[in-house]
Length: 324
Image (cartoon, rainbow, N blue to C red):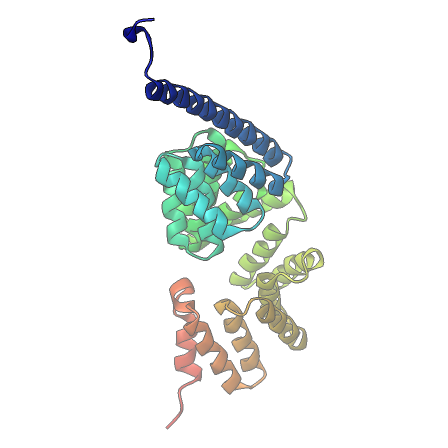
């Protein structure tokens, strides 16, 4: 064989090495895809630990596709491993900005850690980049709840109504719509939404608790007590219900029961300013003004004014100023 008909040894082995690497890459790619598909199957079966294992193998096999991080983040969320979920969702978003599901999942983490503005920002992106109607409408539902927390009641109703037009069977969205309209002083629509929710699910605790709250605000104390007691039978430790039940009991001549339930509420949820407002009223009724004033001041410190207005501040000026 002539010199021109032979491959030089180093070049020959370089070609062989490149072919082996290419074959290996294909194998790793196939392994990654197989592990990813198996992970999705585990996710569908709600076997979230196995899902994490398979998605991790998929990421190790070929460096990880955007979807691999998204799905592992979802699995971590279902396991309540929120920091790990947050890291994976951030990685997915860094790799692909227009990934609606990642924003939706990350917004849920922000909601859990009480950062509603960041949750709202993510939900705006989730709506914008939703890959399907189901993700878009779930984003509307969640955004309605976040806007409620941020006291954007008109925006909350608008988002909740969009979801309701998609799925009119959802009781939770009716409750959100009712509360939004109540805060907007449109009581007739608010009570219509709550009644419709209870027609669909008579024992829904959120609808019962909020019907109780709305009646309290209208000074319909007997009606409020009826709804709140029914809610208590099904969910006896719910702190917001207990707080409102205590106030209803105070207004219907049951101060002992009121104090017992308000203390339970505060033990379960010690950072709720509304509960301290209610307990302050109970202490006032008992003639224990110093304790009442202490609770009113604590309510203000916990952000009552920002969320509910100046009612407690006015009480402090009226009841808690030392007379000269």
